[in-house]
Length: 453
Ligand code: MN
Ligand code: MN
Image: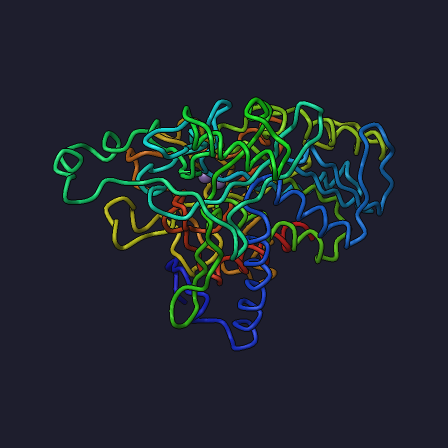
């Protein structure tokens, strides 16, 4: 009898049929990635998926009946998908899956447009934790909405189709970079220089700001907007790249925004495809990358309102329902990267290809700011995952005292709900083009399916 703990490489132990399922599953995932690059687009894409599966919009205050399939669209940026089960929610509570659908990016400022040296630019304010230099000299697309003076909302999506132009942020040539090389990476690239090049042809007959006026004329023609309309716009620059297989054996997928759509997609498929009597609440959250603030982030009381509506409809005490509910906070974790081995502690890190990774705790400097899940809850989950043959592993974000990070887990747990972090290990997290193993994406689907059963 082997008494030691070992991780397993899924590709090494799975049979041919399972490998085929892994690869087929990831074809769907890649489409999901390419069709939704922002929180708004991912919510819209998911609404279409759940509506096709018979889910109906829910209005707060309406009675929820056993067997109902509902969704609550929070301002087009966050989504709650509810499967009202037949099981007793006073005993079993609600099974909650939560992932976030916002990703690091460059947001336009509210007064963004300027001209310098006959080139027109849009100023940005980055959203979430980025390494600024990674966003230079790559093709960027512009996604979002503009609310015009007349109240009409126009959707913007430029840079994704083959015939679209893209936007661009320049870097200094190596020949002239002696000063830049001598600076630290965090000082060598200034946030105020993350300006998107948007035009270079002066408007005819203008002598002041002619290029800027040329750009405004094009925006006016296409969207009916004037410069002041940027005030009521949310425009996000994201990498104009598509999800691609990586490696001759196609073991991996590279994409923008795996964090955290690589957990959102398995949540959705697990929710739509699993036969279950449990009540399942699946959440796509916004604003995780900036602290889960605001009315579309997980600190908003909306989750509490929805749990209350379930309790009221089922005739159950809401505090009893919450006490018996449990949650997988599905967010990515750092995958072990041999190129940066010293950032990790090799016994306690998620390895790419070895399955969806549970983080008992996150946080920084002595677990600070972390939801530290209980041994009892993890013991329960071990049994659930084992029963369905899910290959999974445990990990921490990195070496102790090197840095750290948090997730939405604590905001769910604050409602007296057992919660643990579980997600796909990612290489180059928060880079414009991140990498995951296909085997881990499918492992997440299997783990979330087992949890909602
Ligand atoms: Mn995340
Ligand atoms: Mn993140």
